[in-house]
Image (cartoon, rainbow, N blue to C red; front, side, top):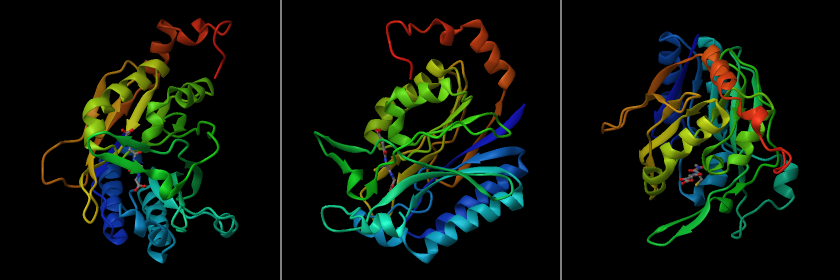
Length: 290
Ligand SMILES: O=C(O)CNC(=O)[C@H](CS)NC(=O)CCC(=O)C(=O)O
């Protein structure tokens, strides 16, 4: 069995502070025996929409990625981290701008190996554009360009990892497709809102784990983010292929950068899949294969 760590933190608009928090978690989790460490969506920064374009293209943000890669190498662990990825110059010039003329970014999950090399850049497919009566209005597409592909599951010390992010959690299709392609672990680095998190977070995570008979690793932002109106739900957790919540970060204030650890038991996963063979029971004669 191998151990995975799932982090919970409160990113601010100050990239260097967020890097220090993330590196601290990587070191402590590795010292505790983790072979892979999962950090939340937007670990690099959470800032007002008006600041996102500039922060994304700042030298501090380039140092953030390098700092995470160095920490992964030093601690010899895999690291997944959510960042704001600047598009290429060509994409910037291709008018990837919001309605106010600001440049946009990708909402990207990097998967980094134990040597510090970037293996994958998964660009979030589904953007959180919602207007819920009673106050919650967020248009992620104001600052973000949507990704256009699902990546093949990536072999790692904790099994084959399928990469997804936050709002993607509400769409079962990509998780089913990743499972069909061999995924054993699904990641959902997140920054769920308090309103929607309280209602849906654990139900959705457990559903994805049960449907795909996979581990679900959900790192999360938590608490009020300085300088913005946003408050994140936290409740970072690990769900096993049977749907049990096997680890969860504390909900005690004031929120400190923290993580929880879980054994990833791939033998148990295979038993679950053998005992209840959902994949050979699918009605492909009635529904299309994803
Ligand atoms: O780039 C950033 O700054 C961080 N990104 C986010 O916080 C994203 C987009 S605003 N949040 C979500 O997708 C929340 C989904 C959610 O809460 C739900 O599905 O209910």
